[in-house]
Amino acid sequence: MIKLRSKRLSKSNSNIAKGGAINSGSTTTVKGCGVTGGDEIKWEVRPGGMLVQKRDCKESDDKVMITIRVSAVSKWHDISVEATSTFGELKMILSLLINLEPKEQRLLFKGKEREDNEYLHMVGVRDRDKVLMLEDPAIKEKKLVGLAGRQVSGSPYLTVTA
Image (cartoon, rainbow, N blue to C red; front, top):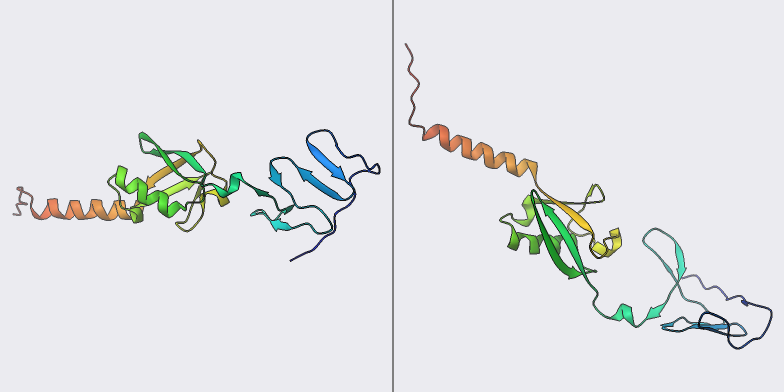
């Protein structure tokens, strides 16, 4: 872990700065979030690789529910899930609404197919975002071949050869 020291925000030693922040020397406190000040700042690496200051907000402790609009062929489904859910969990919920098993579903977000173990919040899914659900073409083809095979064997028509 990288340890960095904080810099002084201003040359003056004013107690209250504008915007709700209190500045006393090298310690900075922002109202609403517990941003640690002093000589040591905690850092975290975001999914995109950006290094940012770690904040401990009270809002992040609660389970944040988001509503996702899933397009399944010609129908829309609004599904409420936790922001930290995976695409596999979303497929399980969709399988209850649509008669497709999770392995038969393909979920697309921002033009890319997402894996079952990817987290919604890590790929950028927010409240009221749209996800496209398609049936797996390989499984769809196997179903059609299976249905076609049944029709040929049980067909009432016979081929007459001379």
